[in-house]
Amino acid sequence: MSLPSPGLIELRIGHVGQLFNTLDTSPFHERDLDHDAEEFIVGWAREHDDGAQLHIKVILRQEFAPSTTGLIQESIRHYFSYRAKVTRSDLQELFREGRTTLAIGIVFLALTLALRSVVPSEPGVVNTWIREGLTICGWVGLWKPIDILLYRWWPLQRLRGLQKRLASCPVEVIFES
Image 1 (cartoon, helix red, strand yellow):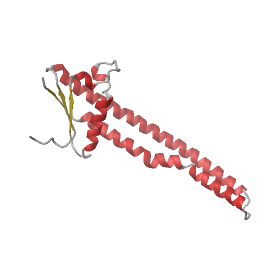
Image 2: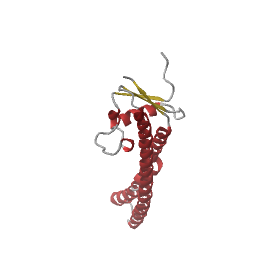
Image 3: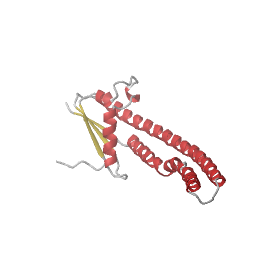
Image 4: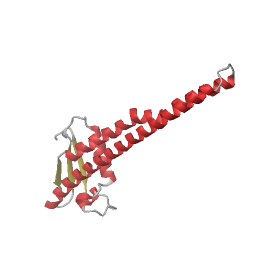
């Protein structure tokens, strides 16, 4: 028995209809993949090294149908290409949100620091608490833009790269009667 090649994603299904979302009424080549099928493919693709050449093998337990091979190949490529575009759009929206929240955060920080300077700096517990509280609130106002611009975009960028790899990988269709 031979070992599967690195980058191989093998999907065994009973018939071609199981590959697609049954609620989507678009023609097959434009239809969404079934959620479970997509999750399976993406999950296995993530298991492989980033440098591994991905290869999808769909094994159908149905009679040979020549048009089905091209349909599956085109559908998988089309779907992951579409998902990569959607993820790119999500990434752009996230950066737009990051820039907006950064501008708001900087204005909020400036306001809290300005208010802090108005509070008398005389010794006293209440004045100290108010001054320190305003400083902390101002810096906490930058939490979300820092989170977005430093951390939250990485997973989306990685997913987009994976989707682009899946859109361009070879798709092999095998029929088992």
